Length: 133
Image (tube, rainbow, N blue to C red; front, side, top):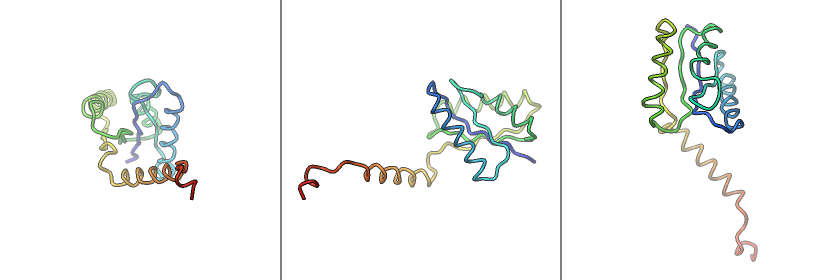
């Protein structure tokens, strides 16, 4: 069964933020060898989840896995996304749509933050004491 993946983010008024999500979706498609991947947004950007699912179904997806680009299980993840997914499923002849957990508690998240901390600390300007040595 061909599975379509949707990288689902909140959406932003800042276009480059939405473009970054689209870039992540493209990277996931390439790195994972997934031929059916789309970005989608809850608000403030397009496509929304229904439109992304429609694109994937038109390209041959028989089921959909939504990968939330959210850090934690907030209201959007707990209430809004399941309701939207259920509505889309019913509108598409009970299309199977599953939702993966948010990013928190994934072991790679701590590794990513450690990497970012090291990058930032390396770029930090020297202190006055360091310059006097």
